[in-house]
Image (cartoon, rainbow, N blue to C red; front, side, top):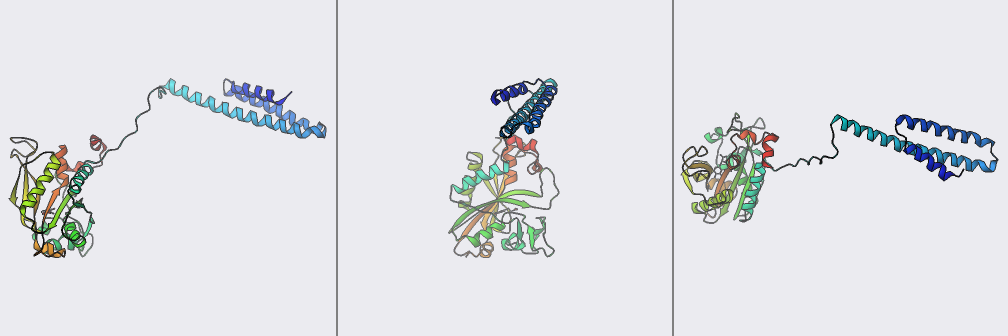
Length: 337
Ligand code: DAH
């Protein structure tokens, strides 16, 4: 019997085995055939032994491979049948869509503001979250016994109090002055930390965007112009503003900037029926701060603002609990997909 038809016949039978039991029987049958061939070899003429051995091995390997293939096919079919019968898996249904992430609302608004300001030639700067007390307070004209330190519920990082978790992004003002030659303009988006009891409007960690412009002869008019541009960028249209006096040690004069409520005409819950919302503190950079940053206050002037980014994001998206922002809660985050 020539080899090829014999092999083909064996492979065909094995591939058609209807179940595991039949498959095992075929395997035994062919193991017998191969065994008999091998056993007969010693009684063959020496010239034929080699060829007989090779052909027996070929048959053995072909049968093993065919049996393995059939075994796998039977198993897959059994699994499929089980799932179909059990109703667990319907292979005709479209595959589930992969879950797509989305940008955090803070990231979105940060990027929008970065685009807005870089398009006007401002830098975007970064600063350390663990900050030297010197930058967080002293250089900002807040000396050691100044009451403003108490209002900032500071997390301290070492026993001497030289290192703090920055309580605002303002320390980067002074770092920027040290690094960049005036004139320059920069915003600093980032996290800040305060040892606050958490509730719907307080978090120990939140976001601010600091702004600083240093140039010759800057005035409150320039500050107002920049703030109007900022609001137009945020709300997509011109928004009326007003300035009230506000005290911050690092600016003089200092202001609280209110914006006409973008959500109503005549009073709503966001503006507490007043039609104004308190949006950001700002002012003209105090000469002591310029000096701390190595800039001559006789030659240069500056304005600065501190935008409460967390609050702005809450306003923008109608979020009523600041704690949601850093909760990592997917039910919250998925709404921004
Ligand atoms: N750093 C202040 C705070 O977190 C906010 C602030 C006020 C920043 C006035 C400024 C500014 O740049 O001019 O309370």
